[in-house]
Image 1: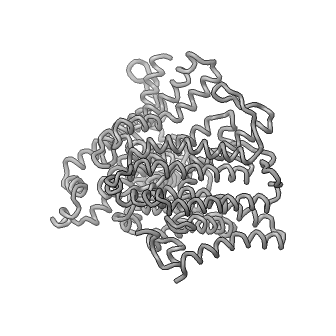
Image 2: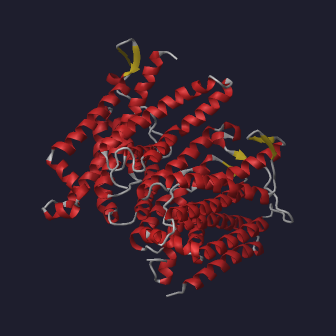
Image 3: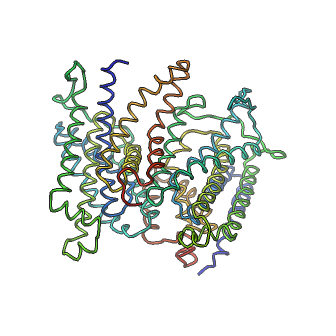
Length: 327
Length: 306
């Protein structure tokens, strides 16, 4: 069986090689596809911290994805219409600078995650799943009824936001930016998993009582994990909106929350590269199967069923011959 | 704001709540007995509506359409229970969520493939259409009144089934201790399939009944599914009584909030902004209600287990 580390390096190399190859053969759309996979991977890496390590089955992570998207949309909308954003009696100027947008996206979704987490973590199990789902719907309907920023139609941004020193409109440069962010997020996630915090969180998932007896607060551990997780997914949301130059309430939709979990499951729960492999495979399936048949979701559903029923460890589990990252 | 309008809206809320109850009752029963979280319950709602629309289109009979909705949804429920759901009982909630999410994808796209993307229409039969005058001079659609009646009757029937029949005793026993009733010679597999089929039939019935006042289309089940989740979270998962009270609370809050919140905001804001704030807040009202209930009682109003 193949060692997990090797699988990870192959995926990493593949993610770099495909866009470079696409430049050589001049296929800019392939670069966009890979960028999409990279961004979804960032979102799923974020979710994996809550889901894989913390065991928090959040069916509402689209909230953070959408908040990131709207953070970008609203800031860029005010910048492109030269209007000011009035908030809490203060007036802010819009911006087209990615670093600021990312910061706002991370902070806003982190704050939202701490509020949602505080409320949802009072419960566990099925209740937690349903409550996160309900919070997702709450934001979805709010976005639809909020006509200032496009309501159901969403917001279009004419020109992709800028990053100092780069021309983000060139697909490969924007890809590079997203790829670097994915690396940063993966590095953080790997460090987190092996840091005392990650170990404690892992224990809090498995035996909360024992963690409590040792003097740690499992609730607080889970909340911190949920906030970190939400913030990373928020960052991905801002990038995703920038990729499409469009935000709409569908970024808040519960199908998206479901798909984020699906990405992780396809790749392998709790594995560092699980979300990355899942995202690549998902985008590939969406592209190839979507071209073959309009009803490709049927096949996605069947694949998903097969993985849940017969291949618990996802793709990484199949390749490495180990079912779980942690049993 | 006349009293007539308020009564009419209360009736609308009641009708909405009662239909939500049909969905929530099945969900909560399935969770209570089998410990399963079933996202595909919305698909069964959709299947019921499509079956009704197809049969009504072919035969013109609304009663036959309802019978078809019940039968097709129950059969579909029994089939997925025997092929997929049965393998999920002992598994983690995450697996249940994913497998039933996969079922949604399959059912939604399958239905789109069979019936196309355009919505179908299910006509209200002549003998139930038109308004009726209630005591006090209120004009109210007869069909919606019939929905309230049907919902309450089904609720009563479900209560009788669970509290007063042998099967009900077995279902309640299955909730408490599945090994023990299996040891007593009850075929637990058959019982589970039966419970799942009952839940599915209720969802299908709700889909068909509501399908006649809304359009019948792919994806119609999921918004209702999520509302039904809110209902059973408020009521306490596993409790039919909780589902009933939760459904009425959610139905009322959603309907009355949509009408009255903008009016309330008009008292101290300019009309345009008031309508916007009010309707935005109204769309979130039930989720706010849910958060409040959970802060007060993390396992819902009538929930016993976490």
